[in-house]
Amino acid sequence: AAPAPDPNPGNLTFTGSFDFLNTYMFRGIRQDDTKVIMWPALDLGMAVYSGDGGLKSVGVNVGSWNSLHTGSAGSDGPSGKLWYEGDFYATLGFGFGRGVSLGTTYTAYTSPNNMFSTVKEIAFKLGVDDTPYLGRGALKPYALVAFELDTAPGLGQADAGDNAGTYVELGVAPGWSVPAASLTFPVKLGLSASDYYELAGVDNKFGYFSVGGLATVPLGGISNFGSWNVHGGVEFQKLRDTTTAINGGEDSKVIGSFGIGLSY
Image: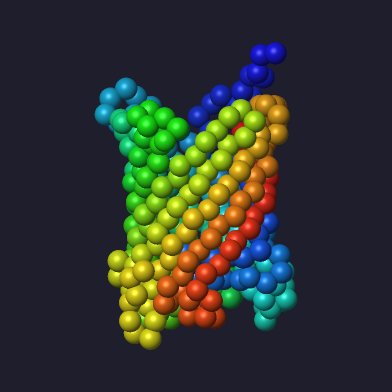
C-alpha cells in the first residue's frame, strides 16, 4: 500500500518527546542519579527560507526542555518539588552546500524548584552531514562552542565556579537505518576552553568522554496525528578531575534511557 500522505506538508514542524532515565549528567556534571528522572520536551521549527544557491536553507526553532525528578534533586529533596529544570531556547540555523550547517542557540537554563541559579548561554554549532560522500560510513561530525553569559562568582555557571565558562564539544554520530528501526552511536568529548570545569581555582580542560548507542523504532507510518516512535539507549561517560569531584569521586557513569517521540 502507498504510504499515507503527510498531514503537515507546510513550513512548521512540531516535535515532542517524553523520556525516562536513571541518571542526569549535564556535560559530565552530575545533576541527579536517584530514583526516576523524566524529560518532557517540545520544539517548534519554522522553515524561513530555501534556495538553490550557496545558502540552501534558513530555519528557526523555539522550544522548551524540562527535567522532572522524584529523587534528591526533586520531590524527595530539600525543595520537595518535582520540577528541577526548565530550559527555554531559540535557534537560528543555516544550511549550506555539501551538507554543512551552522546553528546559533540562546538558552536559559532555569530551576523552578530553585536547586540551581539560572544559567544563560549562547552556543554556536557547526556540523557536516557527510552521508552523500561516505554512505553508511558517514560520521556526521560536529563542533560546538558555548559561552556562559551574565554570571557572578558561584552564580549562573554550570560548575558554580568563580568565572564564566566557555565549553567546547567535539563529536560524531555514525548510524545505520532501515525502515523498521534506526541505530546511532554518538561519541563526544567535552572540554573547557576557559573556566568551564573549575575545581579549587584550577580550570581542568578535559571534562568527560562519552560513547553511547540509541535505537529508534517508528510506530507505524505517518498518520493524521503525526509520526510516532519509541526509542531507548545506553551512554557511558568517562569523567576527569572536576567532573569526578562533582560526581562524589566516581570517575564514570552509565546512563540508561527510554522514551516516546512525536513529529508533526
